[in-house]
Amino acid sequence: MKGLLPYRLPREPSTPRIRVAQVQCFPSLHGPGWRTLSGPWVSAHAVCNHGFVQGYVAGQASAAAGGRVAVGFTLEQVTVRRGAAVVLDAVTCQIPAGTCTAVVGRSGAGKSTLLRLLNRLAEPASGRILLDGRPLAELDVLALRRRVGLVAQTPVLLTDRVLDDLRVGCPDLREDQAAALLERAGLPAAMLHRATAGLSGGEAQRVCLARALAVGPAVLLADEPTSALDPHSAAAVEAALNDLTAAGTTVVLVSHNAAQARRLASEVLVLDHGRLAERGPAGLVNYLREART
Amino acid sequence: MSASVPTWAGVAASAALVAVAAAVAWRQRLHLAREIAVAGLRAAAQLTAVGAVLLLVFRHGGIAAAAGWLALMVVIAGQVAAHRAKGMPRATAAATAAVAAGTAATLGVLLGLGVIAAQARVVIPVGGMIVAGAMQATALVLIRLREEARAAAPAIEARLALGLPASQAFAPHQRTTLRTALIPAVDSTKVVGLISLPGAMTGLILAGVNPLTAIRYQIIVMYMLLAAAALAALTAARLAERALFDHAHRLRPIEATPVPRAAAWRRS
Image (cartoon, rainbow over all chains, first blue to last red; front, side, top):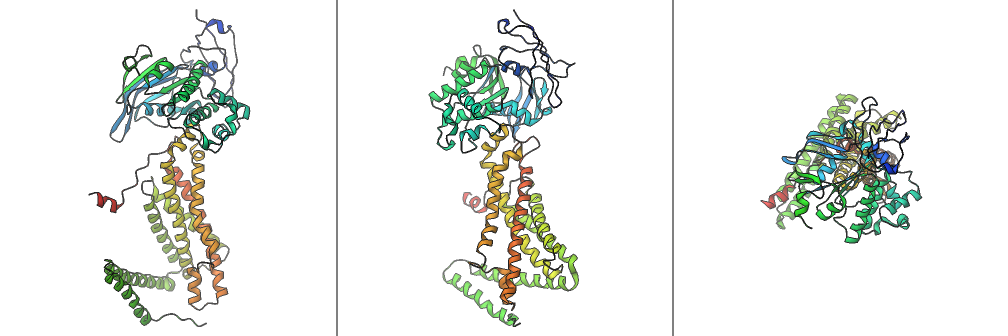
């Protein structure tokens, strides 16, 4: 049975007003009625993050409200060139909200480029990308990047102390909040006052994850987040990503590890030489079934 | 005042020193004798030409010609500084603007406060020193920022990905660069007189001016070089930031540093 939940959202002068028109969810988790949410980005992501709704969010734009529903990313005929080389070739696909989507393929297939398009660190030569029905180019790029966080393949720490690193994107972060973030990323809270210079690769990667989460993103882009890590650290990062997906955050994972994609993702996009070769649920994608790694 | 300025005959006699250098090069088979002779002749020709032009400007041109002369120096300095920062987008415009800003502000203050006279024979040499100082700082800033933008791209993009605007994402790199670019001016100000007797002061003493008068000029020169370096470096850094990032707060791709000629020659 599906419940139908209308959410009325407050009108604030400086924030976009988004009406979530239709939320399909599990009836046992909530009762029907009106709820009010506030914050700079009130969207179905926020509804999910709020903790009382968990599930699949779908719907269409509410034209009357002038807002859009969280439907995730839509790529339409996206082409990226680097010099004469075509990095992505007319890729059209959907990355649904509230789930983990894995982007897999050989190195050089365009996986990282696709990820960088989603927070506008890269720009397509042609085609367009929409987030929740709105073209990325129309959104304020700085707000977009706070909404769509990124964990890079190689961890880069920016300050001398772990706590200061977590505060780079969120200067007002309190110590207890920072400690909670570390724990979400699988690190002990005591690490907060450690020097970043002495961290191992696995610890640094998890600090980077916590730093991205400090901004409160609705979407997390993870670019091969475990490729440089030992199995124990990799498992901790995977667990953290799993928790995020369970809490309703949209996760887009670039991975060359088929087993990891199977463990974490519900949707899989397979790229081959810049083209979208295959897409579908993780259990049904041939690329993952063939690559038994 | 007993000015002991060498005569033309003295200058000709001093060419013997060039011959000494050339002889050393020839005896040691350095393959430099010819180059030393050419360099000696070039120096004489260039300086004679500059002297003649300066004479004309001082006699007939007045302050307007001095301004034109300075503008030409700024343009040349901009080209030289930009050449060092090859690969950075719009480097020539940024370098020229930075040298111009540093020169105009510093010279403006000196003239405005009446520290120096608004005469061609004062404005041109003082302006020349300012342009040279501004050029050095500008070149250092542009070289360093280009290298930072390339080498520290992951850190810059990590900050951008956290939603920081380009100016904030680049600020730590700009700060270290500005420090580096200002160190030569600061250090030479620190040690002036102790380990170096600078040009302006030396020139005045040679021309027979009392040393306590000569140092007055040198103190002003050191102060103005500090200001020129600081202003030019700051302007260059701001303009470089605009050149290195696009409107969507993204690092623009930077062309690879061109292969030096010698290396290219060795490869082929």
